[in-house]
Length: 65
Image (tube, rainbow, N blue to C red; front, top):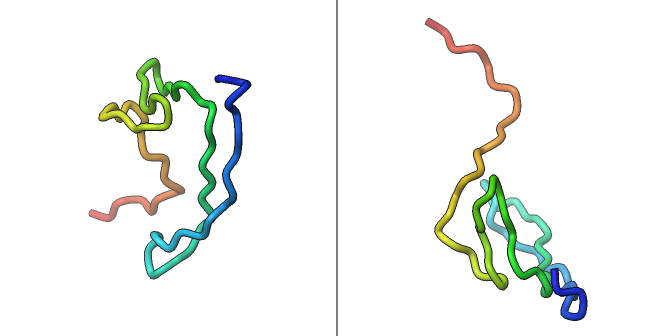
């Protein structure tokens, strides 16, 4: 983290959820890198191609035979 450059931008409403759902998105400056499971997934605010994380989903119904 670059403490001197650390700054939050204003939140913006983004409509990218299913059925037109909205959410808030907020960008930030000052993060040199974001690391997940030992791999850099963003460098200087730019996403890399690395996708080491995994999708976390809520409880799912048991499969039926």
